[in-house]
Length: 294
Image (cartoon, rainbow, N blue to C red):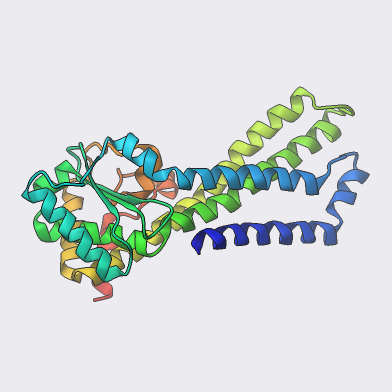
């Protein structure tokens, strides 16, 4: 259902943009200024390229996560710890109303966990060896509840949906800017000159940074929702204790691959302007948010 929503939303956005451009007569304005560009064709090209990239990334997320973290998927528990982890995830997923996800443990001394997958009823939830070794059972259960919350909220699909919308616009606007500069400033009348490629690359870089801010803002917002879901599945106190335990380990190296950072429960600190590119809010703010909603 969420995949259909993903496709329908992206198509609706593209249709709306095309209608707005036609109503404003943007293509005619560009043509008058010597910019011979078929906006509809360009929009379709960018939409297909951007959507497909995000969609393929979503479908391959579980496979890439397993390879990237070298996670051991628990099929037959090897010890009491793995049996407890499997039972805990099963209990939490039943309470959250989702299908039993695959459960894994990945080799890392850092305390972290993540959830991924395109289907909320066939997801992957994994926890680091370091977290299992140093966290209490209540804290570890709260962390797993947070990850189950991500799955139940459909955060993986929603984040892909947002990326599937912003990525085509970055490509689309960057090529319009590059084409306009190539025709108007560099007076190139045939084909594409070096000015087009240089300006397009710079514009795509700048617009990509702005688009990333939007994606990271949503990523931070959904962490509060997952914390709330974790508190509802366990207790407010246990979720706060788990976040405070994570806070004690801030500054330690994180081993999650970059593409999985947004799906972990914590990340390394970023200060100043870098805070706009955090996938997670500061732990202090997450703890404060839980305390105010007791």
